[in-house]
Image 1 (cartoon, helix red, strand yellow):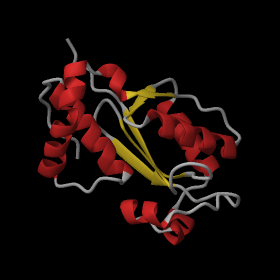
Image 2 (cartoon, rainbow, N blue to C red):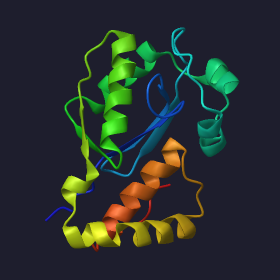
Image 3 (cartoon, rainbow, N blue to C red):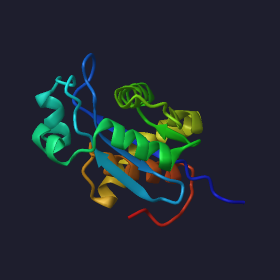
Image 4 (cartoon, one colour):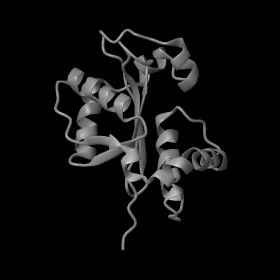
Length: 169
């Protein structure tokens, strides 16, 4: 029987709440391949939280210079993720930021985002935080960057499920 490795998505944003928008999207596929992309803010995306920047360490000028446009990224995501369901540990935030991205791109999102917690038993949910802390420490990664977050989430899922596999690189 093949082991289920859930595809994971994570979106970093300019802040939380009204006016915030996506600034980085990362995903880890079932084969453990990880990709992440910076997003160049649209002209009407003006909200910026210094507290959020302090957490994710992505200055707005870097996004303006290195980020993909909403349309470029939405097309890329649809091409790579079409028909898939990806799982998020912050479903309400990530799904709304993805919707904002696709709205700005004037494209229909061709993949779904669902809650990672739907894949866990109550016991696994209870162990999640401790296991994730160990994963982050062992992998020596800084959270709140999309690439690192999807790696940590996918590895934590596998460990709480008791699945042993080589970590993604």
